[in-house]
Image 1 (cartoon, rainbow, N blue to C red):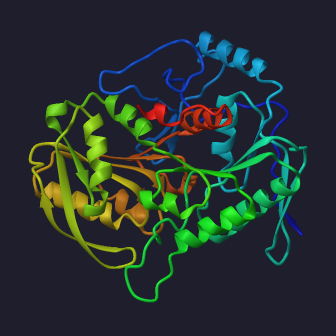
Image 2 (image 1 turned 90 degrees about the vertical axis):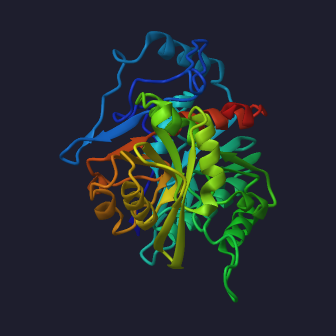
Length: 394
């Protein structure tokens, strides 16, 4: 029996790839920072240098502001008897550890193993009776493995008499199969929603679903977390003049997302790439709606898979006279040949978050990875405390 045991360390360790820059919206201290463009979170980021290696600052007790450290310890001490339990699956343990550190908690002890025939075995190694349990597990590659693992984790918590079980799904696999575009197709997003519900989840917390209607597929409450604040704050730090900025939607379906993004970037103008898709993961750019000549174009999407849409859109923007092109997305799926396309030189920078783990072999010079741990940690606290979640994004 092949073992993949996952347990938290004796003490919560600070991830070495996070920066020491944080704003108070997601800090539980009384210190306040605001930005002229938006009041949003600066999360840890990993930046690649020209050699394609991760250039990451180290955070420790000397680089972290003293007030931030002490307030975290005080808050943690006041919640030492909390009934909140946080467990991680094997899909993205680094993100789970960051969330636990932000919350001042230790990850719950759990053993996850694989039998020789591929079956998943899950055993909680501490009591969750009467607890509010949060399970962090994106259903990324290998999608079916990670989905099954999540379902078994939910079942284990339910059978261990957890009071409430919340599935924290930073990346919701099968989200693109949310409707029938041709006859005799399945709607896999609804099927997966049913599986999670029937496994025993009481609530789902998901990040940037491919389409909003996917929330309606669940018969349980869904907290939809938008990761835009993390990317917006990073862009604000680059001091790009609002007069030179234009936000671009890579397709008609993403116009609402791009419009909301543009509104928070000093109400920047909007452009739309019109494309026609001839097959799955195959896109053909047709024309551009809007003016990008001499401007810095920021393309916004929920995910980058094979990067065909983003790269062809970037080529069109350069043809139309754009000075620089940035690509921003929440989910870095990066299926081949995404890395080759993204590192071709058409994009000034590719800005993604760590809702999915990005393997070191997939680093390239233009890549920047921002952490959403603070955002998810704050949302989990608010769900646990029965506080407003939507007010985070105001």
